[in-house]
Length: 265
Ligand SMILES: Nc1ncnc2c1ncn2[C@@H]1O[C@H](COP(=O)(O)OP(=O)(O)O)[C@@H](O)[C@H]1O
Ligand SMILES: [Mg+2]
Image 1 (cartoon, rainbow, N blue to C red):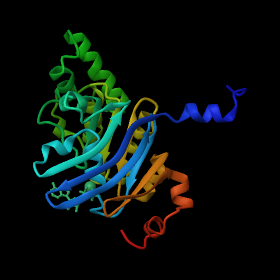
Image 2: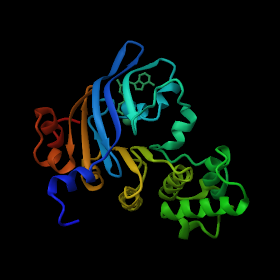
Image 3: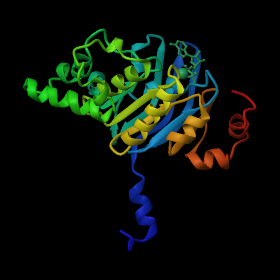
Image 4: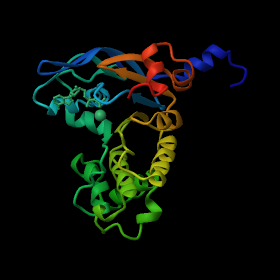
């Protein structure tokens, strides 16, 4: 590897997983996302930052067509994942959401056992043929989510009986269980205490070896800790996107600079 010319090495390291081009989102007459184009790197963490109401969640939801479920919401433009247009009529949004999983702000385990929470996706998508295979998927998903040791003796216990941080890792295990390629996280730590937050951040750092992760966060410290790429949104515009280190140390746009120095937000 070390003999490789440097530009080839770099080119190999950054592969685009999601490519959005000229995306517009409207809620009725509200123009919530304005002409946003961005490439999301594969097997890296991309953070969406910006003041409340700037469109972070709206844009995140475009990436697995969750906005389809909001009646007044209209999405225009192109979004490709591995060169497949995810808004093509032949794409099944349910299949898409297995490939592009989502974790929400408030941990939302189903009112089912820990086991059944994780087994849910593999069951509805028919991913396993027998109980032993399903057991395997449940165990490995909980391992990848860093929760296995804490729950292996209580798999039949309710998911809602776990602590907040454990519930969020359970939701991550549930997302992982269907072998997604992308995981979208909308402020996944904002309901968690600092210790649980640290655990989830550590987990995100491990997961990026195998998944493409997009995280919305209102915490710039968190964006700086967990992401390699950062996109700054302001009033529906994508103002600036680049390597996290560059965005935080050498922002190009005054709005980015004002935001990261705490002048508004
Ligand atoms: N379900 C919705 N219906 C109508 N307007 C919405 C809806 N969700 C978000 N919006 C509007 O879209 C804009 C962007 O919101 P949002 O994406 O939630 O911002 P952020 O996640 O950055 O706080 C805001 O003006 C918000 O009021
Ligand atoms: Mg939001």
